[in-house]
Length: 373
Image (cartoon, rainbow, N blue to C red):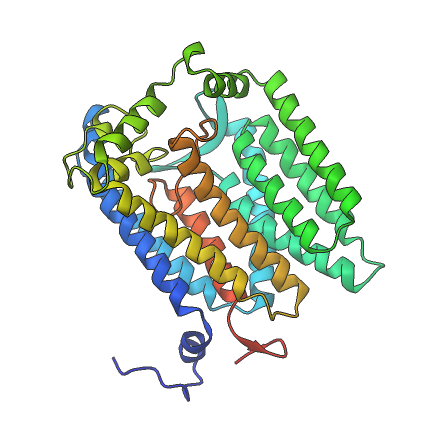
């Protein structure tokens, strides 16, 4: 295949010379890590539930291939195209999330999934990137035209999402969406008094979740005092990091994957720590940090408020999800069933993260006076 020239004005040519190729490399690294970790963690999990050893590997290869295609395809879009995809995606995700309360599959006391042939779909995963872009558009339009009730509409959609996630319940997902939304409000110039009121509201909501949701109270209590309940998975994860040391025990030599039910999903970071050591864990952490910081740095000279709000929200949501997974595995925060982007097993999560990253790449492509170079 001939190298793409800067004079190439085709869709692919213009995309190649305007997209952030360093972020593309970082995403490819995470997808590669995801494949390696499925090889390391999933066979033991599959055997434990009496499935073929390679069932999760083949599924994740398919999911990661789809994710790569989504990232590239969505990153070809213009900001207007990103906005249209987000509006349609948010509407569909809202309908499907509401449907989980009626026809959803209940797992561990929560209705978050819709059963499909060969997999389960978690529609709320797609609310994160889509609502982030929709909220950015509403807030930006509200700034451009005082007659347009952008902030009011953004809060209305946010309230609907909060109600649906509370009903499932999925407090971790809600916490991420709240954090990203209030970050966007702050960047949009919301008065500090209202920001403080919002933070007070978040604190009150956290207290309410602790009071009225037994599973939230149980997790917080076990985090503060490990002797009050079952901390088996976290304890085994911490032991895995200790056993791995600096360089790890070696590929396939870890034991945590044989004892933790979610070793291929929520606790895949512990498998990486045991088999590949602290150095590889730091590399993974550095790649996530690089993607977030790289996106934020590209916004320093961006003049379009919509692009700034949407990109900042997408980058923050991506980084926050990674932080929650790694921090809960390391017992720095209460455990939360949230995947590590591109590395943990899961079709819905991988596709939703790919959608968000594709939007981020599309929005941060180099432009001149609002037009792509």
